[in-house]
Length: 280
Image (cartoon, rainbow, N blue to C red):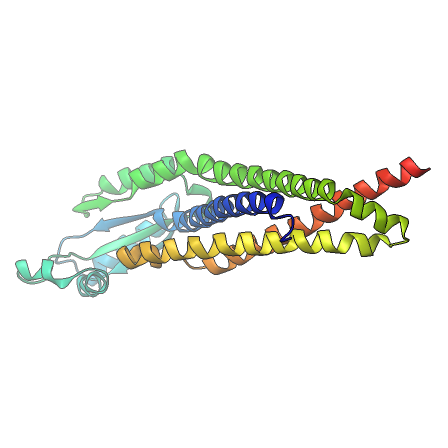
């Protein structure tokens, strides 16, 4: 590898860049999958009640909501529970500006699986808004519509880019091994004429390809992980959405190393087959 560094180093640099892009693509795909997994939680409507509602009225309203079209589950959130949940997720400084508890009690309803689409969410929101016993009805309609409109593109482009990068990596590895074979063609032919087995001739090239893939992808993954860690230190919300990143990056290393070894083997085997046919 040291003797043929003029051939190997450009291939190593290209494998590193492709692995970096592949890692970024896998990371983006994982982020998209997490967003889509949370999308179902967005299909919920919160219907706020006046501050003073009797227990009997709450039971009647709850039962009526349970029998409403498109609704799967109904839960009542008291004013105290809503305030405690707000304090867990946000700073309490905002509440110090007002007296008492500014958050009213409300019903949270979720849609059934068949109705989890923007049109049914809007229908349920409008239907509850027409009820006299609710003061305000809220639903994340804009977010649901945006995710629904971009869902195909959010999945399509990371998959296409990943497939394109894997194809590019395969070509790069094949060309790298082919150039390495051409530069050592006389040595390989002498080894074959001296009675060297296919394994004896193929093994150094397969090892070289695997090493290039391992170190190239390993360096790319390390760089990407360092970049993401720096971003997560500045934006803590990013850190909360990096679960499973280590597995994705490890998959990139295994995938690139395996591809490098496999296509190195295929290229050398094809070269030896051509030589055998020429002898015949």
